[in-house]
Structure formats: C-alpha cells, structure tokens
Amino acid sequence: AQSVTQLDSHVSVSEGTPVLLRCNYSSSYSPSLFWYVQHPNKGLQLLLKYTSAATLVKGINGFEAEFKKSETSFHLTKPSAHMSDAAEYFCVVSDMSSGNTGKLIFGQGTTLQVKP
Amino acid sequence: EPEVTQTPSHQVTQMGQEVILRCVPISNHLYFYWYRQILGQKVEFLVSFYNNEISEKSEIFDDQFSVERPDGSNFTLKIRSTKLEDSAMYFCASRGGAFPGELFFGEGSRLTVL
Image 1 (cartoon, each protein chain N blue to C red):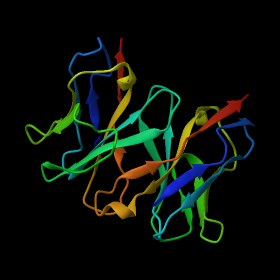
Image 2: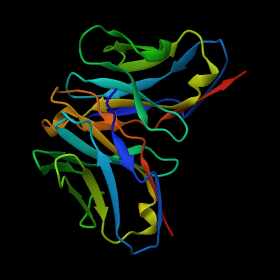
Image 3: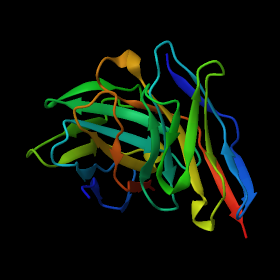
Image 4: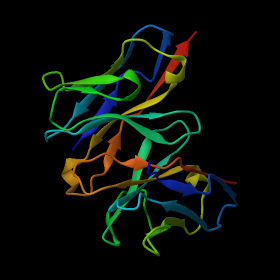
C-alpha cells in the first residue's frame, strides 16, 4: 500500500530564508507524488508533481521538490520564503494499487508559518 | 482557467437532516472524487466515480452517503441522516483521462452538524 509521512506538523521560517518541508513515501510501485497547498479558507492547489520523469521537479511560486528513491523522500523546498507562502502543505501519493481510480492519499499536512 | 466549483460554501444543519453538497467538475474531465477533512485532521478519500458509477469507496463512505451525476455536469454528495461527526470540509475533485494525474479540487463545502 502507498502512504506518505510528513515529518513536521509545523515549520516556522523568517521571510527571505529557505523553506524545507519534509516528506517520506512508502510505495510498492514506482510512485507518482504531488505537493498541494491549502491557503486559509481556500481549496487545494497543486504546487508540483513527480511522475517518473526528471527527479527535480519545479512548481509554481518558486517551489521545487526532489525525488530521491534511495531515501524514499520527496522534500519540498523554496530558496526564499515570502509572507504569502504561509499555508498548509500536503505531500500526496497516487494510489497505484486501486486500479485506475487514481485516488490520492494525503499526508498529515505541514503548517508553514512565515515570520516577518 | 477551468476550475471545479462547489456549493454551498458553508452549510449548517441539524443532526438527522439530509444534506446535498453540489459540485461542478471541469467540463472535459472523466473521473470525480469526494474527499473530506475533519478540522485538524488529514484529507481523507471518500469515493471515486467514473462512467456513471462508483469505482472505489472508502470505509467512511457507508450507507448514509451516496453520489450522483444527475445531468452530466453536476456531481453531488448526499448524506441521508447527518451525524455530529460528519462535520467537516468536503472537497470535490476531478481528473482528466491521464493516469496517474493530478486532481483539481474545488474550494470545499464546510458542513457543520449541530
């Protein structure tokens, strides 16, 4: 079965400093991985996705993530945090065991706080 | 840019009442989903729907829940007799034909059961 574990429930950074949100995955298959962001009172927006092409994936708003099979990790990074990055971030894996339903399995989420 | 729209954004209901949450998926998408997020908890899969039938459902999706695509554009989630523990944010999502592919989510419907 597929699963993802987000290693930090809460991350706090200062504006202009790097962001690192950690995610480990477990999968019996070659995984498809995503990061979604949820701003307060908003829906879930796709930041980026990995689907077995380049291991370094670039997303919107300056975020990127690197797929590391040896470490079963898919950490999300950004060189310089902006106040508008404050949100909940979800690491997500596509459930390949359920045929073609394509359902996604969410991690617990990491709340990113950005201090001025 | 096409988007998934959900109504209502917030609904308050009494325990035992029926609730219908509505969603309009992206028009050329083929796969539809409902997820829920209880306050402070993770986003949980409820059900997936393809070709006018349920393709998968979770343990949460018991007989109190049903889904329907009544007219080719709307996708609804019905809760027949709401319980306090049904209070949550409910997200609708849709996906095109590519597999695996990202899901496009609506902004959610917050359900409060009193």
